[in-house]
Length: 349
Image (cartoon, rainbow, N blue to C red; front, side):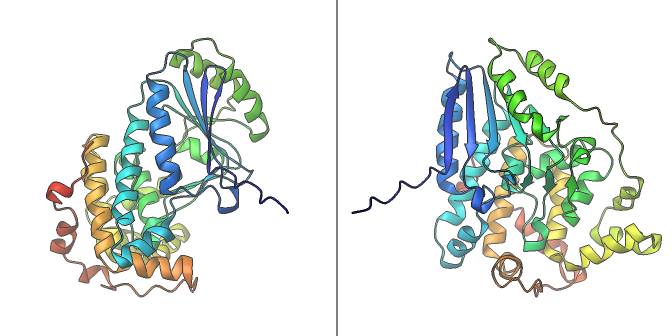
């Protein structure tokens, strides 16, 4: 009789020396984050935070393609359709984890080597150190599936220089390699082949402070000059219609391309996202996550999220039929409603 081989754990949680190491271990699905993984990572993070034997936490993805390509959206979609509680639990527990990372008291180092999108951004960007490589591909592509850049996107995106965050949020534009650090999404840029050595050196540090970790990362760092593409200024407008008008008036290749991109996105998502970033610019991470939880539940109640997932992930016809189908039809009141309190169902942090 052949014994069935034991299924690989979806997350590896190890102590290596005085470092806690988290490895997302679903390489076949680009380390997509599901609720089981969140429920393993969160308690362990809290434990390491108060444990005198642990000095730093390192988080990375298994395989050579992705850090974490996002949340397990298909499971959430199925749950939302039938009113299963996963549609609330997933977002609630994911955001609680994002908040724990954002307020972590020990050096937290995310090695974002490979695809880092959506849920993967939430696991990295709020941490103190984010190390990109030439293989990093960063994006928040949620408006294409009738969602919005969540996991605290409303906090970190408006804090990028100029209108870069809004540009990334509305278009889902992909930043690659060095540009991830140039944009301020990553704190450091290191060649992918040096990551194992870097990790070993971090693990070998004796009771390091954040400054010690910084020094090690700096020593591996390939210098990059930070510059923001000038054309992103076209995203300076107080409404999505205003941004589209700027792009059409400009008429450059860049502007034409972005106009075309925006025309494919959910009009409701675009309007929610603009308001989310405008509000998030002056809120704490906690308040942003409470706001985003309200938005996530509005999307679960709505139409576009299910249609977007169908078009992009299920049928893959890339031809979603949004409702409302134009920006003009999405009224301010419809947008406002998405931000309204859920009463006792609100997220509490």
